[in-house]
Image (cartoon, rainbow, N blue to C red; front, side, top):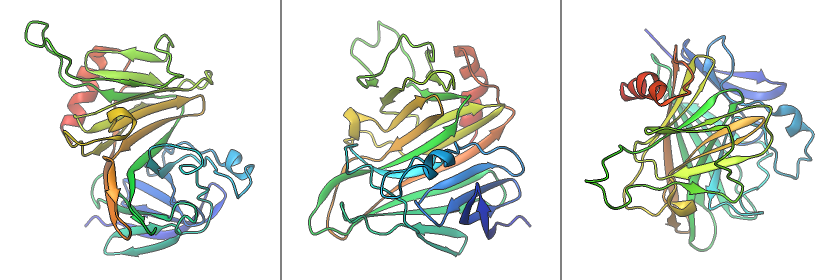
Amino acid sequence: MASVTFEQVEYGGWTNCYRLSNGIVDVVISGGFGPRILRYGFVGQPNELAELYDAARATPPDQFRLYGGHRFWHAPEAHPRTYYPDNAPIDITFADGVLTASAPVEHTTAMQKTLHLSLDPASPRVLVTHSLTNHGAWAVQVAPWALTCMAAGGTGILPLPPRGSHTDNLLPSSHLMLWAYTDLSDPRWTFTPDAVLLKADPTRDTPQKIGAPVAPEWLAYARDGRLFVKQFEHLAGATYPDGGCSAELFVINFMLEVESLAPLATLDAGATVDHVESWTLLADVPEPRTAADVAQHIRPRIAAL
């Protein structure tokens, strides 16, 4: 019978890490900082997540460190609130198949971040629940924000809603959000009828970003024949950060971020809001470069999940 193992390990030179494995994939989270997921991949195969440990170690502990992996922020983005240094040890528990990682309360925001990881015993799927609790004295408008830093070299995939005819669709049906540094002439972008593709080219160090209200409820990243898929809820009519984005892609030379966001919520003092992602890792999926690739290799595999 398939089962999930839980053990304390060292990973990437970091002590006090914890590993979940079902023999198909494994997930490693740090107990020394975060909460940060450091690894997700097929057992014995490369990490799908970016590992930026040298840069993290070179950054003073009282500053925000970009470790890579998966992190948990709260939107909307702003300095210094968003960039709270999550470098302190966190509390790790494992019970009833769920690994819970709770950070200390942020002394500047009164927010507390907790991740709950549940690995399916018989498939490459892990449920990642992001719980944000307001320990302050008053209500705050906030949205949980899940950012997964993928190793460079692959292609991020942001799906678009179904296309239609000019005759039947006289009004706009969707939108894309661009940042001031977004350059649509950059060759890393590929626009197809079904999806926006963004290449994580390690030779290009200028950032690019795009966002959208992603009603298909998934984002993906393809690299070296493997496809990382994150699925999440998109609530029609809800107010999302960044002009209405439930999903975003960000790239720079050393990583590509696959990001999902919950709706903005007024979080009362003492209240908690959750944002849930389901991660799946698929094998034998070619990296898409054209509309035909998306239609033939990406959407059918994701539709079958």
